[in-house]
Length: 388
Image (tube, rainbow, N blue to C red; front, side, top):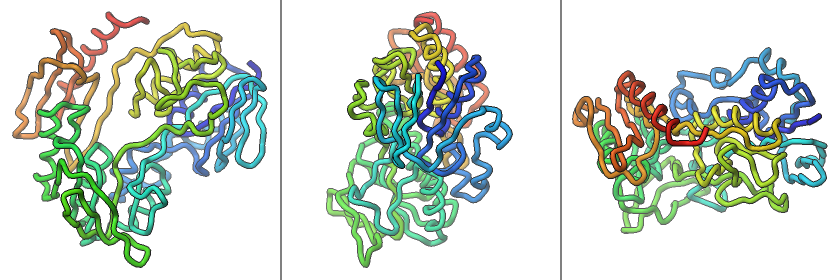
């Protein structure tokens, strides 16, 4: 390959570019990013950045010298609008057409909004640095904040808003927040952190609409008729993979770009990584997945075939109200949950999930050392049963 284009310059895209150079690719390298910013880390946006304990510069994933070492041609603030693998071209929103031999799709995902026709003043999603800048400006002491969605992003925003002196209510459609990820028992323990910190949590009651007065959000209405006054509304209801630009490309798209276990699409000259990639039927929106997949994807892209698989169990963490939650593996299909250390009532414990006697997942609350030990064991067991 003489030219490889990486579309997307967040974590997965940057790691792919770094891996291309690390694995010996010496051809032309092109990076395309819709945002005008240099690659930055997203997890701090809902935590330290909102709290003002870090800056935009502090979120950057690489310094200027590291980026220069990539010897890449950059197109920042420019969106990819079309991929034509047959012609070997990526077309940008400004009309630029990039001739390329290989493509890494790393376009990530787009936050879902509670007001699909556009966000009026006071209504926010949190996905980008620009989103975080605007939201932080609205989170002033005494503001009434309604967070729609009690997933990890929603919980982190609620935590930051409460720390900033806001009056916070969290609205969750599910009966038990995070039950789909952690199961009912552990989901309930995680949800209790809100009450521990004087944050109101309403569950099992979806939002119907946002009330807007004079062009600004003034409240939220729920399905049971409850009306919540609000100065700020934040949507934490998930994200959709950014795949619209791939229409007509011939790639299989279904809740992400469909790939095999090696991140290779139906076209061996195109691989996908990070939040946009649906590998072997699973799409993971976790930092570690976006960091690890490029190692395998780039190897396969340069080989021209799938010769390596990404097999490491997923891992994520969340900081809420001064407590760290960590999870590795999966709770899906578990038939046994055991607290192996600590006490959930004290908000410091470790739990393991098993299916038919096999370890499938590990969860910890403020217990990093025992979690690390069990996570290593989980990796070892996964390596024994999955293809290499």
